[in-house]
Length: 447
Ligand SMILES: NC(=O)C1=CN([C@@H]2O[C@H](COP(=O)(O)OP(=O)(O)OC[C@H]3O[C@@H](n4cnc5c(N)ncnc54)[C@H](OP(=O)(O)O)[C@@H]3O)[C@@H](O)[C@H]2O)C=CC1
Ligand SMILES: O=C(O)CCC(=O)C(=O)O
Image 1 (cartoon, rainbow, N blue to C red):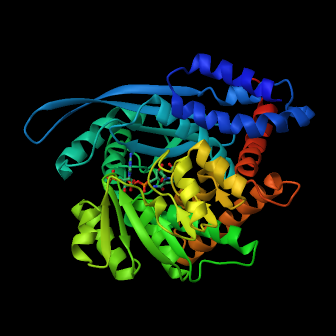
Image 2: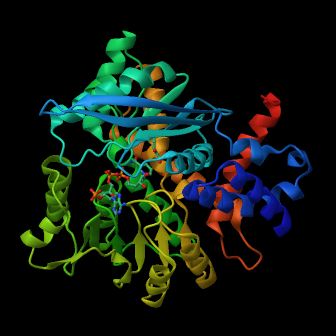
Image 3: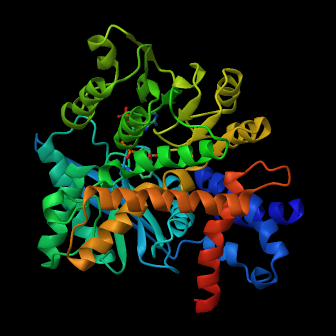
């Protein structure tokens, strides 16, 4: 089997040289899905995975915009439309200087499996720009978003491709993007998710990715009769996902001791309570400041510059910042310090070496395509409400989210349980996500 996997990866590498993140994501899927294909006659000999690693469409465009001093800037915009076999392309937009084809293709590829796992009819896509929102005024952000949408609008639509937020794209950016789409198209549709509540948004969408990551961890812990109650939790990031993962972990009785951003992390020995979290939300979502300011305000906290939180003692780790932020040595430190559960809030935050270490230690490990699927699932619920021209209550959406996360957990157990009873959630998520998309592709023929 290993020879087949190596040959497959050689072919993918030849076509996608210089795309390390994309190759990393494909390798993980190939290792778990190709053996499954070999054992199942209906998928054999159809080159399904080879078809799935090729985007149906990749769009790249110029975004020119003018800053507050009248200077003209040029950025690159992208949309990767990866797979639409089970529904319109769906996935976020990322604005960050590191954005390139490799990063967006890995995100779009993972999105295909994630969206399939949600049980909702959504294909996979991802997009964004190398634009850096840090330090920009609201007016500059607006001009950039408007110019970005002045090209993207011709490639998306509520039945074609429905973007949402990701790193650097939150409620403010979605508002500006939606405004320009509505004006150019002269139509009010659910073409983006993560919208404001008064113009088509869904309750719980802002909370959904972070809450879902914790719900998934809760399901894993429940298999051993355990829970969040009294646990020490390390969270990375301080953005949308990290904030609401922290909020839900606190609700469930845990003590969250860390948060981070790209400049370092804070450790609060007394834990981050609801009031301190409110401070973080204001700091990050409105003031757009740095996490180090938390340690200036709260004497119980220390700021560690340029470091990640994984060498602190914790029971549960929730990486919620970005890809490849938790390495093999971090995983070993977590395991040595007694960590029993890692649930990815970010996309691919753990390196392959870290994942191998978690599997060897047989601790709970949930890959982002399963554990952070609550965000896109609730986007799917926002699309449903838009189609119905109706709004569900907070409890209605939260109950649906909780049920979806439980169902994803069950699917991962179904396909990921090893002979000794240990659940390999990576294998489970990859195979369960693959089966639904592959069946649709087979039914639709070679297109
Ligand atoms: N928003 C959503 O609904 C979903 C998000 N995700 C994933 O969750 C992760 C976080 O997204 P989200 O919270 O929305 O984004 P935000 O922009 O709200 O927050 C991102 C956080 O991660 C930090 N970060 C970003 N890049 C780096 C880096 N290179 N090194 C260290 N820290 C970094 C940021 O710090 P700084 O401000 O210093 O850059 C910030 O604290 C991403 O991997 C995203 O793909 C997954 C599913 C859905
Ligand atoms: O809500 C969405 O459509 C996108 C969420 C997303 O980008 C992700 O799941 O990584």
